[in-house]
Image: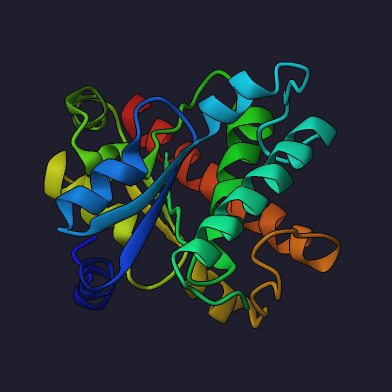
Length: 88
Length: 129
């Protein structure tokens, strides 16, 4: 929210947007801050590709939600590798 | 309620879970939550809603991003819950994990949720007076 250091990091880094819903707020906020999007992941796409998984809990993820989160994390990590980033 | 969605420390996680406890358990049917990233991305409906209805900012740290966003786009907040400030007041440590909270951490989340509910009670009392 106007934090100079956070905005500078977004502007100077390759950003990965991870959006939970079709409104794509992560992508939009990166663009508003003047950042460059190197990759964009949408949870809705992952849900379409995995119709058998139906996460229902919001506050704490249920089993299907956790499986989706792990799958998405793997995809993001692979993208980080592709972009030449470092895993912790 | 507009909750912090911060990832730089565990207090963003505390904010989100405490807000959902208020929404689902403590103030069912009396409250809604607005997504802070959507609010920042410029959704006029969300900003209009926060202009029309008393809005509680649930901020994880002293940066108070939720409060600042509401004040910038919708007007004065009805209340701010500064979780970092509450933890300092209680002498409590922030959770070590940003991803999963359990045990003692969930006790802190419960206290934060109760504080948010208290602010909402105060808003309702002022409205009804």
